[in-house]
Length: 589
Image: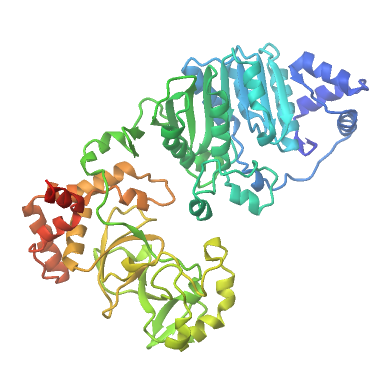
């Protein structure tokens, strides 16, 4: 049965029907609910009271529950909520005040009532009115089954969490032991915006990203992260604990930002759960736990929530370095510095059906299956992440049109120098105009990004940003032209093949693999980023490798790929990586 679109058990229905049918004012009804169950403001007005009485007097089967996507709604099941509160109980946590900032159907509240015996106040906030009712009904159901249970004062508020005044609550109960518990929505602000949701905070750049970072994705923050940070910031000076179920990326971001924020939280834990089992979703999520009002700590222990004996990993800050595995990082920390060569992202055009081509019988075929004739001058082979499987690549399966040699370059030259290409691109102008990213605003026709001198280097070493292979690839020219990579790849470019091969050997060494495994996160959207790759100090790596190992690896590459290279330029390679300033200082010594 449902009332106000909220599920209600027969037990609760019978109780309300028996106890409310003779009550005519919502004030008296509220007093009854408070005296019996501790719930304050059960009804907002007489209309709600009369509606419930009317529905209870007859049998109703109401509409199915609507789509809850805009609220990021993955309700915590009762069994998991109970295990979570028992886990906190095993830590000898016994709060006086329990706050659930997005309480949903109230399963964490019910679990808290069941397992914490000394609660004085419970506060639940929920934007979806049917869930407000369902939480209230579930509380009644619990107390009807457990009449001798402790009855705290309970407030379930219908409110957008971003409008609720938590600071006032922190001031009012400043001497009490707090527990912030719950499961905030698992969506990003852009997802909610696309759904025209009202479940959004006031638009702010709350992480102070630069304009370009905000435009290209870093500003697309997670709603759960915003809520979690709000809870930590508001209650960090209170005695108590926080435990929220969030995506793994949120936990990583909070630990990363802790070095800057220095919130008064400690004993940070990530309790990994099986999201598929608990929520039937393919999202990596975990329980974030921390102790409030403590000297700040900057690392996080990782546990399996279902086998919670010992931590199997610890990530976070070690001195001024952020790492994904502190224990393994220690063995390779010497190469954590700054790469002497600048890693770049591949080119970006956001117009694949037009710009990416196959070559069939000497003709180019685009993503619309149109066969076209183009001048070869601006057409280059291109590799994607999925292509970077071999150690050396000299042929591509795809081609792309490269309209610029640097970002922002005027493209009018194409019309006179490459008329076929210009005619082709112009015929698909609507596809370029439909590109959504604001980075193309007020840029020349057919603009691309991720292009520069480095793109035209004949020899490149590259890695996929998406895959977890920890394997680098040497890219050789194709038909005497440099090969491009798309924006899912990262690359360094060289004029000399020897420098590229020396770098390849260093980057594919066991030391580099172990280092990268200790600073990258397996559940990240991109395993590798420019920031991560720039931490590989190739000069330090070069100092560590023995000439015998270097010679052996070079011999293997020569034999397998017929490269016929020697180590005669090794010293030049070392000099190219050595900072120029050292030599300048020596001149004036």
